[in-house]
Amino acid sequence: MIDRIIVNARIYTLNPAQPNASALAIYRDRIVAVGDDDTIRALAGAKTQIDNANGRPIIPGLTDAHIHWEGVARSLTSVDVFELPTKEMAVQRVAERAANTKPGEWIIGHGWTQDFWPDRAFPTAADLDSVAPHNPVYLKAKSGHAAWVNTQALKIAGITAQTPDPPNGSILRDTSGAPTGIFFEDTIKLITACIPSPTPVQTAAWMRDAQRRAWQAGLTGIHDYDDPSCMIALQLLRERGELGLRVVKQINDPWIGHAHALGIRSGFGDEWLRIGGLKIFADGALGPRTALMVEPYEGEPDNTGIAVTDKEEIYDLVSTASTAGIASTIHAIGDKAVHDVLDVYEAVRKEEAARGVPRSAMRHRIEHVQLIHPDDAHRLGELDIIASMQPIHATSDWQMSERYWGSRAQWSYNWRLQIEAGARLAFGSDAPVEPLDPLKGIFAAVTRRRPDGSPGPEGWFPAGRLDMDTTLRAFTQGPAYAAGMEHDLGMLAPGFLADLVVLDRDLYTIAPDEILDTQILGTMIGGAWQHRIFD
Image (cartoon, rainbow, N blue to C red; front, side, top):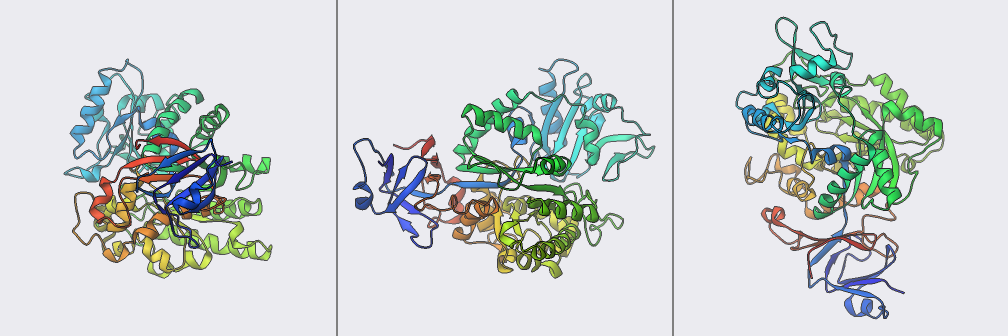
C-alpha cells in the first residue's frame, strides 16, 4: 500500500544513480519508488494521497549542521539587537523592553556587534544604566563570545574591580581596574550563572514556535550545540510526539564524563533524536578578537586571542572520547586554533588506526574553520575531518576579517579550499549568531556577497564560490554523513526517509540574485507535510 505519491514535479534527487525524476512514492515515512509520473501513478491504491506539484522543483530536506537550538528558541522572546547599526538603537530597544518589565526582572537580548557601529568601540554598563536602572540587563554579542551587562547585573553577580579573570576569559576594565560591563569567553558564565533558568516546559514551548519557523525555512533537521537543558526540552517534545525536526545533539565537554559513565556512543538514539559528538571550544571568535592566532591581530601587537581549552586538554578529551566510541566536534576559528586541533586529530587518528578503527567510524569535525594557515590547508582532507562551516559568516564578517586579519583574510572562510583538499563539507548557520534561513547560506556560498551586493558583483575572494549542486549537498548529504545517517538522509531515493522541500523556483537554473527571493512552498518530514502553502 502506497500512502502518498507526488507527481508532476522537477525532482533533484542528489542520487547519482537517478539524478532527476518527476514523481516519487511514499510508504509510511520512507520513499519506496522514484521515477516518471506514469510509473509512480501506477503504484497508487484506492487510499493513496496524490499531490500534484504542478511542475515545481523539489530537493531533499535541508539540515542546519551547526545551530544553537535553545538559543534560537529563546531569542524569539528576547530583545532583538541583531546587527543594529548604532549603539543608540540597541539601547533604545532595551529601554522599550524595560518600560514593560517589572523592576528586578532580567532583560535578555542578543545580536549586537560593535564592529557595525561608527566608532567600533565596546559599549559600557553606563549605557544600559541610563535606560534600565532597576533591571539587570544581559545582552549577548552576535558572536556569542562576548556579553554586555549593566550595573545591576554586575551587583547581582558580585563582580567588582577585585574579581579576577578566569584562565580562559577576560573582563574588560577601565583605567582604574573597574569592570566596564563587557565580558569575554568564560567570564560570561559569571553573569549567566545568576540568570534564572526557564523550566523545560517553557523551553519546549519556545522550541515549538522555533520549529514552525524552521519548517518555513525548508529545514528538516538540525545539529545542536547547546547545553543539557536543550536536550531535556527536546526529549519532552519527543515524548509528546511534538518533535518535528531530526536532531543530532552534541555533548559539550563539561558533561562528557556523564556520557562516558553511561556508556553512550555517537549515534545513540533514533532518526528523530540522536547523540552526535563531544563539543569542545578551542578558542573564541573574530568579533571580540578572541580567536586564537599564530600572529597577532592587525594593529594589536599583544593580542593573539584566547585558548579557551588548552591543547593538551583537548587531546585528552578527544582521545578518551574516541576510545569510548564518541567522535569529537571542535570549535576552531583562528589559524592557531585550527592548527592545534588538527594536531590533536592527527594523534588520535593514529590511535584509532592502531585499534583497527576505520576513519568512517569516527566522524570527527572542526566547527567553523574560519581561518586556516596555508601550511594546514590540506590537513582536514588528509585526516578525513569534516569541515563544518557556515557560508553566511563569510559575507557577514568579510570587513572584520580584512580589518583584523589583513592579508591572511585570503585564507579565511574558504570552503572551496577544503573541497579541493578532499574534506567533506557540512553547512549550517550558527543561529542565532546568524539568521535561521538556509537560503541565505546558499546565497552566500554561491555568490560570496551580501544581499546588498557588497563587496561587489564578483563577491569576496570569488575563487571560493561554489556551484549550486555542491552547495545543496553541503546542506543535505554533508550533515547526513556527519550524523552517520547517509543511508537515510541527503537524497531522494528508495529506502530513504521522505524528507523534502518544495520551492517556487528552480535553484539550479535561476540567476544567483534570485536565490533570496525563493519561497519555501512545502516542507515534508517523514512523509508528512509540516509546512505547505501550495495547492
